[in-house]
Length: 249
Image 1: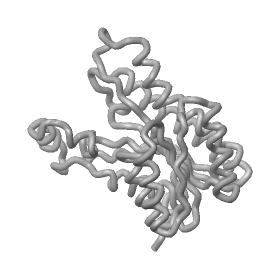
Image 2 (image 1 turned 180 degrees about the vertical axis):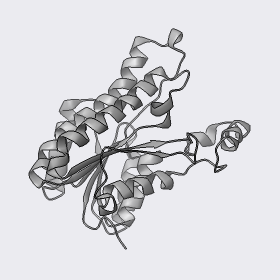
Image 3 (image 1 turned 30 degrees about the vertical axis):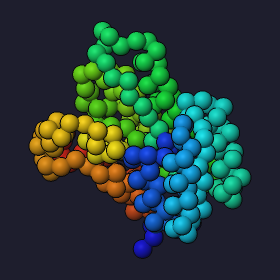
Image 4 (image 1 turned 90 degrees about the horizontal axis):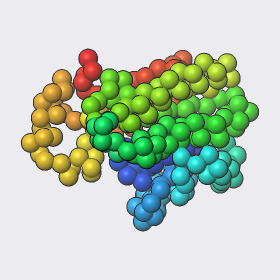
């Protein structure tokens, strides 16, 4: 059963990691996927080719979600390329610039807030008019367990992800009457190509501290997004789903 057959989806920051995992699962479920990348073009074009091979429309766009102008231009291009409709927006783009507060620069704080949080405002604002006209849509914001509980050395990242949760709940209240839902996902320790570079002993220590005794996969997050994007969650909005193996239990 394809849960997103012929739905048009925008995913920011999808040329690797969690975003790429979401794009692949959504294409498997029949979604047409527009996704953004910010730097290297080759992986993005490779993913575009892979998604098209699944029989769906797919297109990579180089776009900086931290720029409101670029967000508006992206939405306009997607509407033109995907038949004038957008059904799902996944705000996934994000960065980290970790440091203790006493050592954190203003530039590093601002960069994380701009990419992680302001981008959510930019993209949601840019797509809102289309969703309102359709009287339907699902917005999914990629927060983090760090945004729920905080983490030493990540004041900028935690603030951006906590802000995303407040934004999510507010948008759900504003747009619910138009059948537009807005939810957030808070991933825990997810194993990607970035964690593959870490010391195995350190990674195993993290796994041991999780009730399910493993790190999450990008598919675990993609499946949670699939729930929020599809009609399975038709009566769910303003919620934060921790996908963390029980880390915050």
